[in-house]
Structure formats: C-alpha cells, structure tokens
Amino acid sequence: MKVLQIIVLLIICLTQRVELLIPPKFQWKTIDFAWNGDLKNVAMASGGYIPENIMPTGLARWKNKLFIAIPRWKKGVPSSLNYVYLNGSQSEPLLPYPSWKDAFILDDAETINSNATVVSAFRMHVDKCDRLWVVDNGVADMSTDVKQIAEPAVVVFDLNRDSVVRRYEMTGEVLRDSSVLTSVVVDFVGKSCDCGEAYAYITDMGSNALIVYSFKDDDAWRVENHYFHFDPHAGVYKVGGIDFYGSDGVSSAALSQVKSDGYRDLYLHPTSSTKQFKMSTKLLRHKDAPEEEIFNGVLVVGEKGPFSQASACDFDPKNNVLFFTQVCKNAIGCWNIDKPFTPQNTPTVVRDCTLLEFPNDVKVDKEGNLWILSDRQARFLHGHLDPAQVNFRVLTAPVTKLIQGTACERSSLVTRAWSALSSRRNSAKAK
Ligand SMILES: *[C@@H]1O[C@H](CO)[C@@H](O)[C@H](O)[C@H]1NC(C)=O
Ligand SMILES: *[C@@H]1O[C@H](CO)[C@@H](O)[C@H](O)[C@H]1NC(C)=O
Image (cartoon, rainbow, N blue to C red; front, side):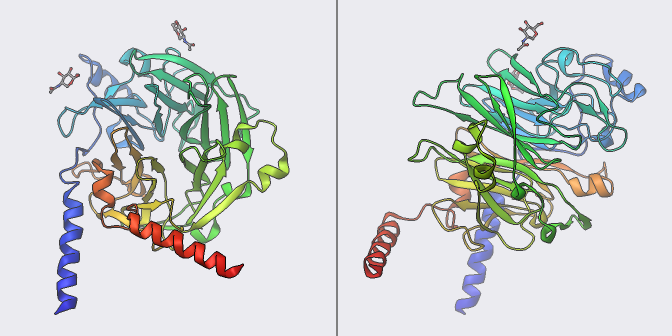
C-alpha cells in the first residue's frame, strides 16, 4: 500500500513538473520569418529560403525579446540572428536582428551587408550591460559545401540601441581549419564590474579549445587542454529513435559567482562526455599563462553517469545551480554547485520525449526563469524533419519551481549547519 502511494505521489509530482512547462511558450513546425512585402516569394524562388533546412540551436531572453540563433548548417537560411517578441503568438514568425537590411544574406554572398551582419551563429549571451554577444562563424552551407563569407568574429550589440558596439574579427592565430565556435559567456572584472572590462570565453567545439576575448584590450587568445576533447566512451547517442556517433569537443560553458580569490570558475564540458570540468578564470584571463599551468588548470568536477551528454549549460546565480541539456534523456539536468557532483546530485528536472526531444540550449534569464530550446537535431542531421509535426519548441519556467524538492534545491539551514558541524567534528577527530 505504502509503495503504491509513493508511486502515485511520484507520478503526480512528475506530471505537475511537466505541466509547469505546458503549453510551450513557442513552437513551430517549420521556421518562418516576418517577411517584408514580396521578399518571401523572391527568396523561395532563388533558394534564399528553404524552410526544411532551418533548425534553431540557441536562445537568449532580454526584456520583451527572445533571441533565436540559426546556424547555416544547410543551404537556404535567410538570417542567422533573429528574435520574437515575448507577447507574440505561439508560432510567431522570426524577425531578423537588428534588421532585415543587416541580417538577410544569401549563401553565395561575397561579403556581409554591414558590421551588424551575423552569418552563422549557434548560441548567444546577454550580459548585465544590456548587450548581446554573438560569435559569428562567418560560414554558409556548413554541412556540404562550406563557404566562408566573413571572418569569424565576436559581435557585440547594444540592445537598447539595436546597434553594433564591437565587431572583433578573429585571426588565424586563434583558430584552426576545423574550428566551430558554438557558445560564448561573458565575465566582468573588478569591484565595479565595469562594462568595459569584460572577457568573453568562447568554446571552439570543432578544434577542442577555448578562445578568450578581452573587450578592453580588443585581443583574443587560444587555450588548449586535453579535457576539451571528446571522451570515446561517450560517443554513442540515441535520440528521437536515431542512433548516431558524436566526437564533438568543448561546446558550452558557464560562470560561477566570484569566489573568495576574486575570480570565477568556468564550468565547461565537451558535448561527447559525461563528465563536468572547471577552470579558474584567473588562468583564462592570463594571456601568457605558462603551458604547464594551463595543462594542470582544468579540474574534473565529477561524473554524471551513462547517456548524460550535454550540448549546453547555464548557471543560475540565485540558487547556485548549473543547468545542462540532457540530450539522450530528452531532459534538463541540474546540479547545485554547493553539493558533491554525483549522479544522485545531478537529477533531471524536466523530461519529456516529445516536448524535449533533443534539448539543444538552456538559459537562465535575469528574472530567474529557465528557458529551454528543443529542436530534434538528431532527425535534422541524421534523418529528416516532418514538416507536418511540431519540430521546435521553447519552454520556460521559474528556476525555483523547477528545482523544488530535487537535489538541486538549496539545502535547508539545519542541514547545512549539521553538515558543517559534522565535518568539523570529523576533522577534529582526524587531528
Ligand atoms: C508586442 O510588443 C511589441 C513591442 O513592445 C509591440 O510592438 C507589439 O505590438 C506587441 N504585440 C502584441 C500582439 O501585443
Ligand atoms: C559599424 O558601422 C557603422 C556604420 O558604418 C559605424 O558607424 C560603426 O562605427 C561601426 N561599428 C563598429 C563597431 O565597427
């Protein structure tokens, strides 16, 4: 009887948790845009818009806007950087950012339209100074006939003015032929956390590296480490009924709060890995850090268990919780960084085979809401998407509600006091 009650309770709590997210804030069968006049027909006729080739991979919320990034993986993506208003309809068409004039380009373009053009981006970051950071790979038709339209660049927008404040083109020195720049996260320095003193940490999934960009010095450098490579034990995936192999390196990172030494930890992971790593920003910000320090500078935080590969992560500073996509589990996982990193302490908080088929990106906004993008990427890359079905979804819920009753919830004062006391007692015994 007891067991049955527990099971019923469990089912209720699970369904409630999923219900929190239903209905999705946005969902699309195929991605369409808010076209100007007759442009849609012209673009379709010329191959500038091929709906079935479009799959979003990144999101970021700022005020009344939700930004959505679409890499030029295949031909016919009219605009890589886009947004919708939060007050829009559930299948709202996308608006190119900052404008059609800047963002719309064809696959065979020779140059970009302006310094505000983003050719191909995966993910974005909104910083505390109302700026949007985007890493442009500059390529079209990535999967078949790669064409470099612009130099890979860090592009920073002023969201209040919808204008570019910086476009930093990366040199060959920090990149490799195999470079694929996926995520960016931004760090502020000093007590005043001045907007000008920012560092961006960019993951190069294709060539297993981090690229550090100093906004103040307008300079970038490359950081390599063996832990940025994929783990051969974690190369097998099964998502949406499709089995595939992956060998992607470091693909996403998130920053902790400033620690007592004045620096943050950068939490990072390769996609094809079930481990969590971290590295101090003290080392990353040091352009000429000795090779040996970099070699020893990445720490293994822990292991999440089988099929826990993650494409993206983000950190909630209010609850001290790291969130990550759980690609093979159709779920989002979490970890309270004040607790040991173990499979027990890294539960999934939402899980749904349909709504969360291939959760690709996850973000925490300034108000403490979690945003999730699921996009059926396995079908898109290894099979095909059915345009009659919903393929892309954006779900959102407050973090505090999501982690309630899970191992990611902040432990109560009593528990914390007890564990502090018992560890003190143990260390006293040890002496
Ligand atoms: C949504 O907000 C935008 C910007 O504030 C506004 O222009 C638009 O009219 C609003 N749409 C609806 C449907 O209310
Ligand atoms: C971008 O281009 C505009 C218009 O040409 C120019 O005014 C602005 O200074 C440029 N910004 C950057 C960061 O290059």
